[in-house]
Amino acid sequence: MTTTEKALLQRAADLKGESLTEFVIRSAKEAADRVVEEATIWRLSAEDSRLFVETLLNPPEPNATLRAAAAHYKKVMGR
Image (cartoon, rainbow, N blue to C red; front, side, top):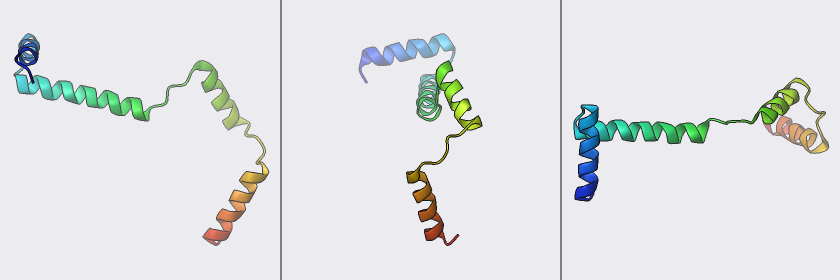
């Protein structure tokens, strides 16, 4: 970390009334929370949401590939 970077972080910590360590840890946690949220939460457009719900409420008939996969699963799992 450069002297300039440390001075900036210290100034920000002072403005928040925190120690440098508290400021850096809190800031890093907030950034980590955002990264995890962005990686795990799906955000759909209004149209995508409508299509998703429509498909759940009125699912299409299974095609040959899906029927074959289900048969294979039943065979492998002994069901």
